[in-house]
Image (cartoon, rainbow, N blue to C red; front, side):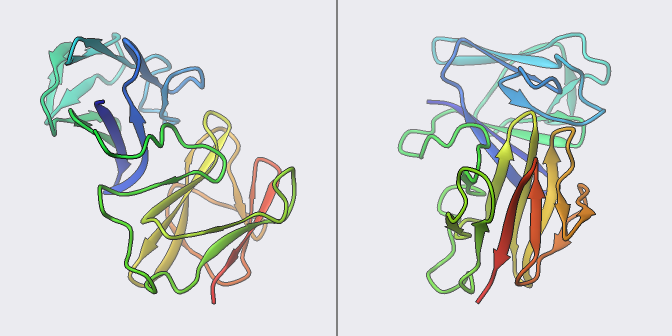
Length: 210
């Protein structure tokens, strides 16, 4: 099954399997792929499947859709093509057989930056996110992926990314900006420290690192 791998500044934030005939892309929360950025139109583009072929069609967006740097109105996607919408890059993977169906970002869902990108055992320094409030209070999720997304699509989503020097958090999408120790988190990555508290759409989570 083909999939789209969404990234910004080289960091993968979500993977979406193309399981429907039409997959919409845009800023509005009802889209299948939500990109909450002012450079993205409410209904920006649509991915249409015809057999094994996938076409990208721009929906008269304000800033246009690009494939491999070239503006397009409608074009057949080839494996590894990169769709550019605003600052976001969406890589088309024609055949994702055998990969996990991670779908859109979900509450404490995790997404890997590419196949086989999970670090070797012992390279995460025992880092995890512990939920402090809400229905999932007490749940702890180990940060074993390159990128772990937390939140609800269309409401508030943040991404925690593993880097050589540690973990960083950044706001990905949603009108409600998450906070870190009471301070708003922007799209600029912020380094996490043991004990930091993230508040995401009313749910508090603590970053724990051994």
